[in-house]
Image 1: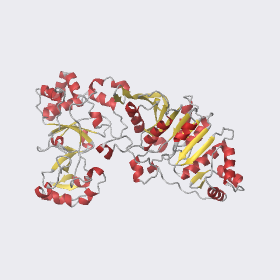
Image 2: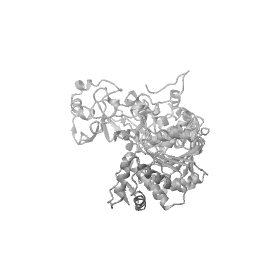
Image 3: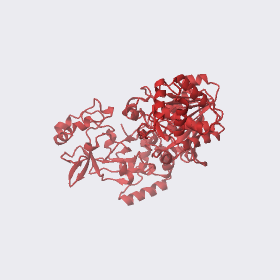
Image 4: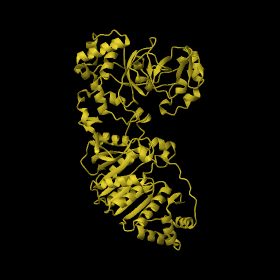
Length: 590
């Protein structure tokens, strides 16, 4: 193996090219020879490339190490997996005439297609990284030199950003032919590529039409593979054909979720789970996404083990107007799928943990920079993080935080006059506050925080980590008559009455709620439990249907374990608090 144009080339290919092109001067003649022998269109872009290649393969070369492109989401598919994908498609009796690989990389999906599909007339591979364009061409030549009797369709390997390429022309020119779109788009988000100054980005657009804070704080970020997949669906939606792409599981979930409103013309949607650690040596949950184009929209996705077709997994998708992760088990808890009468809130966001989060050592506060900090106590509150919520009841947090505002946007000048020690400490680290990257802090008062409001100061809370894979709700009690805060990886309900908090705590940890959450959440999601998920728990319906004896048993256990003396005397008030009045509905929070 040697390198030309920074691309790997086998000795078989370099010897062939050296023997057949050494006396060729014209780029037109060289391209014609390659086309006649292998079907590749415009092998050389210009005469300079021809000359460079001839010189390079005429002399021995040392191997140059390949650049690491994983930060660009570039996980090249090994030829064994590409062949398995192609073979899997043949078992579905897929016989494409046109094959499109939107980000073809080194061309392994193309060579796998040449091996497994006998009816192909044209192949289009698009790739932005020029060394991979060359390596794709070299790999195709190597395939045909090893398999000279295989059919040779017309092949175009095109150096272009996928976001600038005109796919509509391919669709228009091949309107009656069966198309297969296959490959492995980049496993990276638009913000990640943007931070790397990558040119392979879609034009600036609010991809999912998010508004305001959602677009600013994360929901405006999206997976490039999702964008590419939807671009392929849009361009070829009226075409007879299929899509088979390796993508992260979140991409498949998002596409099926959007089906309810977008109604993409695809059906037979399938997710075939792969072992990403084995195939790509990365800890990312990914699968082969398959669907059929030009179809009546389907609203659920069947799951399979890619390596064991008989090992089916639960299907997910839409049942009426509800999105669920396990269609089979959802029916057991369907009755509580509605709207929570209380509003779930996210914890505090400050993006300045080294300054704002404190430990207490020997009676003194110490920040993340290991500095001993002198503060007034008034603005210092206990805070819990996701890792703390493994416990059932908490009233002694291990960390503390400075709360500079009681509501978002509140002026913070008061700190300078009322709490001079705190102000001196915070202003002494103003440069760290100024370096916060999120745009939500732009033009906001000094030391601003988010996720703060009246609800933050409720004395009793029930909380859950958004990061855990299984549901576990924690009861949080005040510390020295001050409410305990949570960070922004946690979600909470806040209450003024301990009884209301304990009743909610029991309901949220009951078997029905656990089953329900298991049937609507995805364990491979970056954040399993979100506000959208938790707001679907109809606590009123749950409270009205729960067996009172079961409720009393749980309450007795809590009283005994945590030395409470609670009864069900407030149960009717709790039900009334959740019950809608007239056309509106009482909320516990502002």
